[in-house]
Image 1 (cartoon, rainbow, N blue to C red):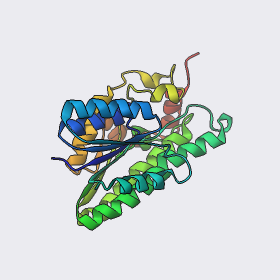
Image 2 (image 1 turned 45 degrees about the vertical axis):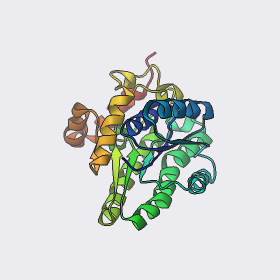
Image 3 (image 1 turned 180 degrees about the horizontal axis):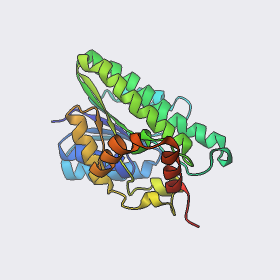
Image 4 (image 1 turned 120 degrees about the vertical axis):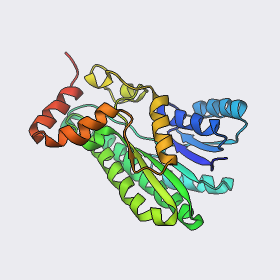
Length: 259
């Protein structure tokens, strides 16, 4: 039976599918997100279908002390977390100077500070036990700068770099960290990020497919996983050879809404 998994942002999209996949394999879960009703519905579904135990912890990881409160809540449950999946995050379209600064700072809190804090707190427990798996949900956005999503792209560049670095540090102790870098995914993310009307939504992958790529890569202890082979070739072998200004204009064109 798989170790108990903690999944953030589990109420929808990739996080919900990660929870389903883990439960299908017989693994117990601790799931967290802001929406208590969605978590309760997922808990009832998974427990009925797969005879697993699911704990729900509704809270906002982006608030001050949110990650620490989650850690304390898990500790109070007496549950040993063997798998940590840092999935919670959000984006936001728009010219940097025209966007609400507080909104972008909140994005940094959730996309960067939360996974760093949780990886530190739960990673220490994993190191002490001599085993553990982490999945950091990043994005192919990490591999290029993102005009009109400047902060979001930068947060995902941090997540990928962070994940790879701590994997190298923790691997000797039996703990791994995998960065999942999906391309566009058909989730609520696009509406929340105000990306409807941009070309980024074209050919968006179903969240189940993306979650399965990430879950399998994590279980195998892979360093980095991209769900789309064509995007992988483009971002790893083509884009790095292009002039930087050309790349910036190309990405800008993908972010700007059609008039």
